[in-house]
Length: 452
Image 1 (tube, helix red, strand yellow):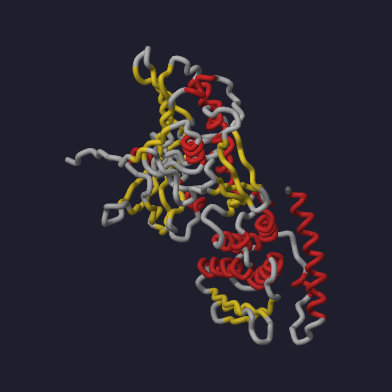
Image 2 (cartoon, rainbow, N blue to C red):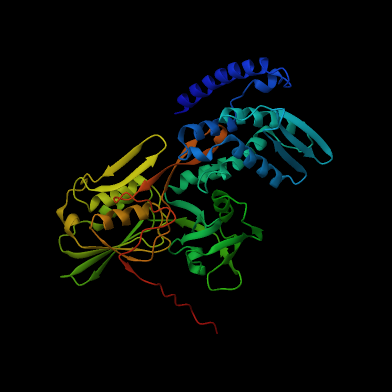
């Protein structure tokens, strides 16, 4: 992928330089750009824009002018002394950015934005201008700000990961990390708890799915990304973090002080219910990480003497798509549709392959438990088993995260998490922001200890 991106990027450099040069020769009333303004460099902004061009799911969200506004807005947010105004489509057909830093006002003439490569040239020129100001900023920091602003114009799951967060992201896929055991997502533009992990400090403190986190250590979360929040929730073992949350039915914010602990998540817990002659297996899948499907098979073993299976996906925030497909495959006959993924380039349908050849897995009655904290990969499993009439789903409508993200390793240790597609259930429907609707709807009852 890296070679392909670099080749296309170099080609665009040549093509754009050629076409732009012709344009300036034919329009003598425009102020000519200096050669240095037309020469592109392989920067973080360029790398991210290339991935947007090639991989992002929704091209309608990529107009360069809208992305530029996002980059400028993020810069203004972080530096109140900077004020930026774009001027497009004026009568003289010259685009400008009016830049005010304190009392200093400069008008930069820029090219019209027709494609993402034009946006890269404009941001490069703006970066050079900011480096001349007394803002004590490096090239890397300026580009990081621009990229964060651009991605905020897209969706809540497309983010730039700093080296530290990217390293922790890779560690978390293995199920080991330090923190408070809280999974969050965006719902209606609010940072929302998807689920607290079983036995974690967040779970013990009483934080619930759908709680809205409005402050972390006294700082408002309104402008934080999901990954910034996760980074703030981690820290030294035994240290504390204070969260303020809004909860439906409570007129005031609730405050929680959580002590960070080492979190190790075993993906699957298995319990035997009933008697020896009429055993019922209870399988709790906490998330979908590396080898979750294998762990489930190893712990379930043979189901010949088992009357039924309860598959508990409550408060399961999801994880790896491949593992959700493999878990669904355990219980479905050959060639049953599990999920289809649709991207800007192609669509793929995943069918069951009967990877685990045990007839008891194909015939045992199954009940799947879900709630508002069931998201992403857990919704894929619930929908696949429900719509193939392989299980009855009981509980509450799930969270409703129906998009697919891919993470790329960028230069200088950055990671780019980008929404590249959406997944559809076997019936062909998207559950994004809707969720999986259970066959039997149950309202939860919470019993809290009585305060003395």
